[in-house]
Length: 592
Image (cartoon, rainbow, N blue to C red; front, side):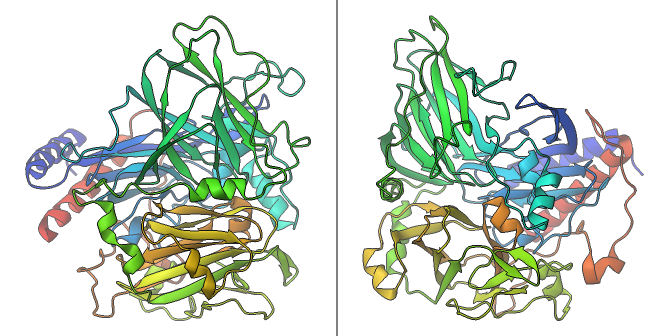
């Protein structure tokens, strides 16, 4: 085998030539392991990447090819999924059980995907077994190409803010609670960038907790990219005495509008422009507090960071800025969400205006109404359902079962409309066709806000309202500038309708982003089949480094477990990694 240095030179030479003829590559080498941290003053196991919690930022530009080598140094299987990244015709890189076998402990696997025709703010995380409740998440920034204009002046800085509810219990304990039919209960607090709250209240926040401080310069404007990476709690974000000008959500530029506070639901991402236009008589609070709960009981579930001007004259003190006063107005948050509109005058990742898609004039091919009910008991186990079906992930990934003609792994019988029959546990999948245009209605008949995500796609949020959706509800749809995103909220006793253009063959995950309802079965997949047989034409082929499991486990060659590292990869790993990269690059060049 060639030396690491020789392989590295060969890789550099290849990339130098490829860079002139193809889109650039960005390489990342990650070691996913446990560290001990005390974000709330109590030591606990946290999932870190290269010893960082939160993990490193993937900062790339439209059309970049992203190569991420992941070493699993945990004691359980691992996948990484890329929320909001549209893996064009390449579900093999999605990082969910329907398309990928998990990376066994001590093994590594290399993701290789392109952020084709995409911009915006996203995040990645480990989707298996409630692992996100222990960390493992980080940000993805996809910048505009220089030739594409941005609909606002270039900010003076870029600030990432991860907010999310947090438990002192380890994710394995939370998982056992759900397995035993118990509720997770009230979280212990809200973390901001992996740190506990500033001690704004001596009785609610213990002494000695590390908190996040964001340093800024007076007179400058910063872009805040905010992600709710929590377990199940909707949060309201506000920055004391500052307006937050919303400009982007999950890959779509929005009409610029100012908010003093905004509800950010689990799994959602937003970009705000915030101008440092205050007099800095003291520092300012940044607050993320729980929504739609009994605030007198949930007071501790509040994250507080500090906005520090370089010329600040003192520490922040006094009461936090007030949350929305809408206890008796359940339409406040929904109207806030409805007010977010897509900026149809800008091209985002491409020169043509987004409005030229005219999504409201496309004929709908299929309609699916996915109804969420409160948890039920099936076969003695507490489960959650969509349209009466509680999804059970099969041991063999769905896409592999199709490719290798393995029968009986899943069923193509997901109902278009909910039935009133008894709930069942089944690997039931939505059956659709390449280039179909879907209308999906999420009906939430539970008592809690749910958020729903569709992997590999952005969809248009056409409408939302309280009550039961019916065909007459279409009269309220926004068919022109509804925001395009990948994760939408559905309020309790309400519905949200989205429109989706199926331009990528493969299997694509539809799921609740709330970790407890997702874990207990609230998900399915959309099978997007090219009836003309577009494998290797409309869909990427199975990658050379694919892992096998389930009915295909005999095909898997053993991989020698690696030792966890804190810096550079060992020589053997580096050899294998560079060889894999070279093979994949050569294959891509040949295809092109």
